[in-house]
Amino acid sequence: MTDLHTIEQANASFYALFESANIDGMANLWVNTEEVWCTHPGWPTIFGWDQVRVSFEQIFSGPELPQFLTSNVRFHGDEQTAWVFLEENLLGTSLSAVAAVNVFKKQEGVWNMVGHQAAPLIPDLDFRSD
Amino acid sequence: MTDLHTIEQANASFYALFESANIDGMANLWVNTEEVWCTHPGWPTIFGWDQVRVSFEQIFSGPELPQFLTSNVRFHGDEQTAWVFLEENLLGTSLSAVAAVNVFKKQEGVWNMVGHQAAPLIPDLDFRSD
Image (cartoon, rainbow over all chains, first blue to last red; front, side):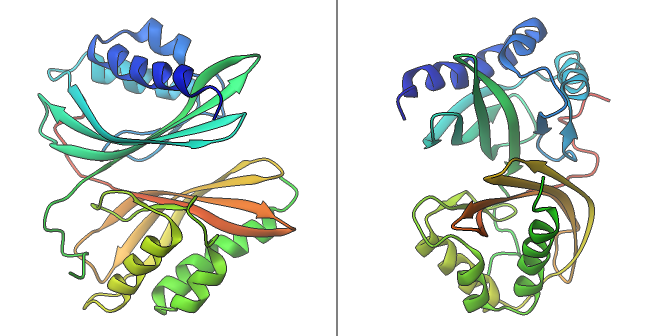
């Protein structure tokens, strides 16, 4: 992946903007069209930038702004699409950790965020067979 | 999306194979390389077909085989990649519902599964600001 450093920066900026409740920065980072999607942990998936923006505004105005310690970061992708897999260790919320994937798309030379899904990690879940 | 019907069938077969614990069918449905990933609900993300296969074998040998009622199915994509967003309503497990995304890739005319993430839906999660 030739743009790895740029993608690393875009991914880091997502968390910096989140921690600082920077909605304008989020709007610059994300693709602002109907094609985007976002699954906040525990929420149904939201589609389209207008709705995703509202969801961030709701979170940013809430009582708990998370801090993120990211780990196990892994990059997949090609020239046009990048997938960043990582675990978000959350401080300051009732969640402890989530398995997340952030998807970026290159358009006119710029990598913008097009998707985010965060799946809560559940200790001792009965669904596991081990 | 020109191949919508084929993608619908591939997506439906994922759940049929899951419910019938058909590991050979899963191996045929998925891309069998390192590029695949899978986030079972509550688990960390698993990478590569060998590990994903082991995870299905573990689930299939466990006490609870889920039954899936899918809803709110939505398709995104282009000629090479398809994203199927949906909610899985689970019967027969301790989970009630997850927000899922299934990703398919077209290779040599065939749509194979390359990624799956299932994020548990959590009622009344404190992370929500409303």
